[in-house]
Amino acid sequence: MSSEATANKLLDAAQVLIQERGYNAFSYKDLAEDVGIRTASIHYHFPGKASLGLALMERYNDELRLALAGIDGSGRTNKAKLKSFIKLYSDTEARGAICLCGSLASDRETLPEPLQGAVKTYIESSEQWIASTVKDGVRDGEFAYAGRPADAAAALLSSLQGGLILSRARGGTQSLLATLQRVFFRTLESA
Amino acid sequence: MSSEATANKLLDAAQVLIQERGYNAFSYKDLAEDVGIRTASIHYHFPGKASLGLALMERYNDELRLALAGIDGSGRTNKAKLKSFIKLYSDTEARGAICLCGSLASDRETLPEPLQGAVKTYIESSEQWIASTVKDGVRDGEFAYAGRPADAAAALLSSLQGGLILSRARGGTQSLLATLQRVFFRTLESA
DNA sequence: GGTAGCCTATCTACCGGGAGGTAGGCTACC
DNA sequence: GGTAGCCTACCTCCCGGTAGATAGGCTACC
Image 1: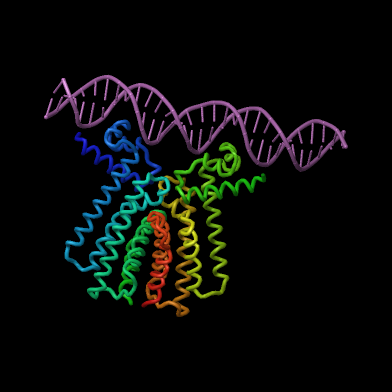
Image 2: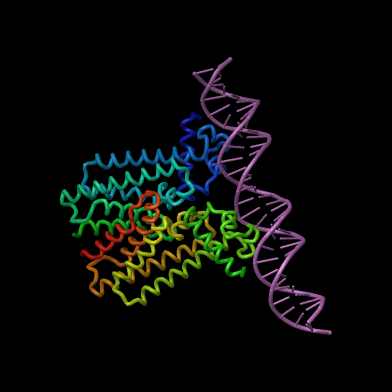
């Protein structure tokens, strides 16, 4: 097994575990069993839990950048772009998971400092992209929204992150994220 | 020290720790140090960590009921009532904390089943109260909102829970919750 | 009113288990 | 034959939890 392949498998498994149980409730034992190596071998790829967490969050930030660039390059309306963004979260909801960033943000006080920084980066990137897309939508006459784009961005991201957590806690089959999308566009489309 | 006084101190300390660090990142050692007894003595008051968590969440649900009854009995407008509700969360934000329920919901998959139920109760009580207050506000002509009250309730609670988490993760001094309140009322007050 | 017996709230001392992490050895492939 | 990748074996620390003792207070009966 190439080093990179194993490292990626470890990151994949860690991501699932953190999104399911949180940073403080997953162990090297879980990780080792999922990937099929011994716990000690994990240290060959990542010197410690902190570095694994950081690598994971950096990969997550890279994926976000890529996804947003993909959406931006699609040439669709701003409303469609925002819908694509929300769909990233709906897909997570469908898996019964919560956002990696949201999970880590909940455990923030117990996180190593570099990881806290990476979480913050994710939040800021998301907010900036939403705000910019809302702004373009207003400019293009798609939305009647008269408030600050940054406010709408904060409201959307908050509700998506909170929505994933509440959706899982309620345990039902209802699609909470679809509701949040509906309310969000109602806000944007009425003056 | 009376049994009840010690038990309350334990619950107080546990609540602070869970809101700061999460259910899986606080220990009997932390608790014992805060209250000033030995870890073994905790078991006299609560047989195990699960029963302590459940007692804590039940107390939290009682406090919610009391707070909502107080707001309902205040005879103010529905908008003022909703503002009072949001203030409960603003106060939490000011303390740099997140909601106990939100913290536990993030760790949901690792929680004992009864505790999961208590978390669900908290969410449902909150949503029902918000929806009912929004409905009354529409009836009384305070809001122009034409959507489903339950949708607005889900959106508000999601954004408040998510907002607390994001606010702490961003680490800044900005009041994110004030922004969320602004956007929420914008949604309610335009058709 | 003294004392026997029980209850409350805490203590010390210990347990098994699992956490993250380290040291050093084996194997197989360039 | 060096090194990449994984192993076994081990360490230390701390976790939640248990057992049993202790001190002090309340109750009730002679």
